[in-house]
Image 1 (tube, one colour):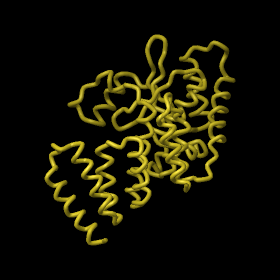
Image 2 (tube, helix red, strand yellow; image 1 turned 45 degrees about the vertical axis):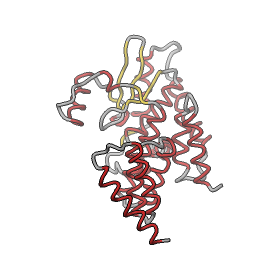
Image 3 (tube, helix red, strand yellow; image 1 turned 60 degrees about the vertical axis):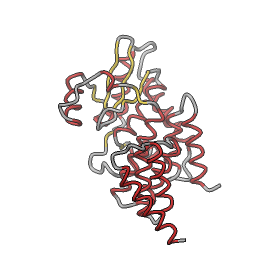
Image 4 (tube, rainbow, N blue to C red; image 1 turned 90 degrees about the horizontal axis):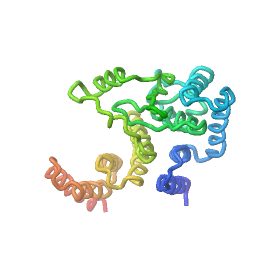
Length: 277
C-alpha cells in the first residue's frame, strides 16, 4: 500500500467514526502532501496551546472569560491570523502548516479554534456561513459567534446580516438556521473543496484531482464533486473515468437541466476511450 492510499484509508476511517476527531481528520488530509507528517507532534501542539490558555485563567472561569483568554492568547500573544497577502497559498489549508506558520484561511483557523477551545472546556462548533467559515461558542444563555480569520472578532447580529448581504445579496434574509453547526465531515469536505479550487487556480490539475478523489471517498454521491472530477479526468487524459463519473451524475440526477448535453458528452468520451484502447 502506498502512502497516498494509506492516508486515504485513514481519512475515511476517521471521518466514519462518531464522534469524528476533527484534528486527526484534518491532519490526515495533509498527510498526502506531507507523507512524513508526525500526527502526534501536532496533537501535542494543540494540547499545549490549550494548557497555556488555561494557565492564565482562574479555576471555574466563565465561558465568556475563557473565550476572552483564548482570543487574547491565540491572536494577540501568538499572532495567529488570516493570510491576507497570499490567501490562496495551499499551505493555508493544511492544519500542520497553520500550526507551524500561524497563518491560515477561515476554515483552518476555525479548526484550530475549535480544537483548542474544546480542550479548554468550551463548546465550540464550526459554522459554514456563506462565503466565510466561522465558529460559535455555546454559552449557558446563548452563543457567541467568532471569526478567527479576523483575530477572534465577535460578531453581533447586525454584522452577521451585513456579511450575509455582502456574500449572497439582499434577497436572502438572515435566519438562525444559517448559523447551524457544521459536522466534522462537512468541515473536511469543505477543506478538500478549498484545496481543489486552490490547485485548479494554480493549474496543478493532478493535485486538484487528488483533492476531489478524497472528497468523493467521503461523499460518493456528491454531484458537484462528480462533475468536477469528470472535468479533471478529461483534462488529464482519462476519458473512461470521466464518462463513468458523468454516468453517475445522470443516475443520481436524471432530470438535470443539462442531461441531454451530459449524455452526448458521455458518448463522446466513451468513443475517445475506445479509440485510446
